View 1 (cartoon, rainbow, N blue to C red):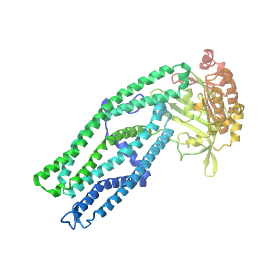
View 2 (view 1 turned 90 degrees about the horizontal axis):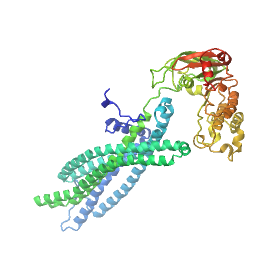
View 3 (view 1 turned 180 degrees about the vertical axis):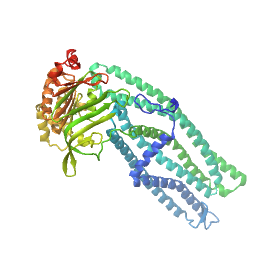
View 4 (view 1 turned 120 degrees about the vertical axis):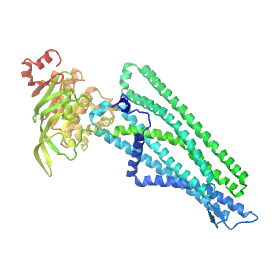
Length: 631
């Protein structure tokens, strides 16, 4: 494929193409109608009442003109029995009646305006909420690889900023376009029925010319505007990333450096914004000039027509034409915010779709077999390479069984595939070839049956509910101890949580705090030390009471003293459970039932045995030990 046909991607993997495309417009309209299907009555209310609002606005000056005609007829020396209403003669000649009709229409206009404003605000809010929910659901379903490629700051700006821009764009663009088209069509129809068709024709030609030029200017403005949007979002995601790493900035004493950096980034955004502002000012100026010139133009046309044929009746229709032309002028003036909103909304819709459209490859299999008890896990001829680098094999053909109640450890150099084992067991990835078979007790109607199924076909939530995972960097939610530990078992009582904390040797620390278990831990457990974070995660696993335990370098980030304390808790946790430890320190694996040594550069299993067997046998394990890589 040529470069011209490829998407222009930024460093985060997102499309940053600035050209207009009907595909992007289609994405915007798709998201509108997607919400319309979910909120049919609200959507119909927006459309119908916006059209009604435009109809009332165009007919209001007609009724006011009829009232003036009634007054003129009443004071005339030769009053008529009928008045001309558009193309028809009507017998309603009392000006007071037309006054009441005008006032009633005015009240109806206020009511319809309120309904339009309320319904479009409600509908746009539903669109925003719907897109946020859709985005969050899709993000929760996405493969782990997706988050390696997309920075969290960029995702957050899309989740918050783009959904709001989409909602605001719908409020401005969608209703304005309905109002604009309905109002102009009705104004032309009224002019034709009123016998001033030549005004309608000239107005249509003038509008096509002025709007055509405005669209050409807008295309240039849009490109600059999107460029400015992209710079703004880059600044937003950068600031989000820096704030999430505030401890690094503070510990490095680089506050001044970061302030200067932000100023430089904002200057780039400012320069991009300057170009957008220049074209925006040009567009605004053109609309104002063409709109301002329209009214004098039609006064001149009426005067010329009157001088030419001296038709006083046609000249008397000038007030009506003026009001209708004024309405059209107002509609044209609405083009500026409408087009700007369309740009923001279309760009936001495209950005949102880049998060919601990608299909995950790992499916949760809700209809798959539900496991209630894991007995053993077997790798059958498993081969693995990461999707981003399929040519590089990480694990060659591997056959190994993790038997019930036994402990296993994987060791090896960096890049040998140790953590990959954990990711496969958690089904973050699927093997390129082979199967991971899960033997255990499965739910079969009202009973449990012993069976074995491929991990790719099992009901994933049921499997993961029986798996405990402790990793190097503990995942702590913003909330208190109860909320964080209960995440492993939502129906757990406070007493069960406290019991789990006692097992993890965390209870005494918690009750020493002012608010005890209700203490807010801060973002990512900012309040806790590394050891305390690991104890919290261990308490979670105790509460969960899994059959299968995965320890992925759980103590590698801790000092020796804290490591020994945490390892003691992990040893208690491993008792009676099948466990797989990914390790780089001897202390964490010395007592396991079997050690599996992985070779570097995709060699797979090169040695296997107990610690005593491996340390006394020449081979890879002994070399790692003697080189100090297991200390």
